[in-house]
Image 1 (tube, rainbow, N blue to C red):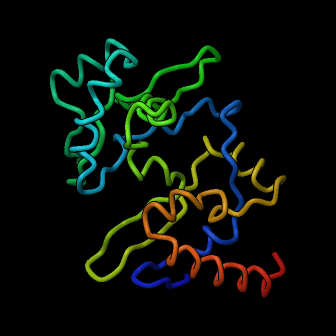
Image 2 (cartoon, helix red, strand yellow):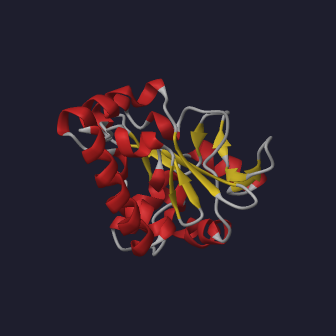
Length: 193
């Protein structure tokens, strides 16, 4: 573990490689799993704010779920998470012409229609952050659906923390990320990675 301020960062974030390969996984991380995406404080309001602008991009079954329970719910662990359709797809997903699952919020953000990109937990995936009383744990969620991303990342020699630079800065700030980079590069040099 590396400690950067109040965060304990798993060595997997430093040592392992990752580069999303949507042509292989088809966006399965937005479909598979036992709950929706975890939300940070304030993100529920953001989701409700962007909803009118993305409503027409959502699938009819997702619109029905939102009408019945809203954009989020409390999961079995007591966390606020995005609502899901039929125990699978996030309500904010859509499928492109190649059958790849994508985020309607991110699509609107990239088109300049909204100011919120998507929940930070989605942006950070496959990193998951768990808040404890005195620290935050920053771990790599290793899952078979991401195997193609691990292989592509290894081929391109792209460590997880570099692949996720933008969302890590979004979550922790530039100064924190700079500290992580210095520590990670020193560690990788020592380990000859």
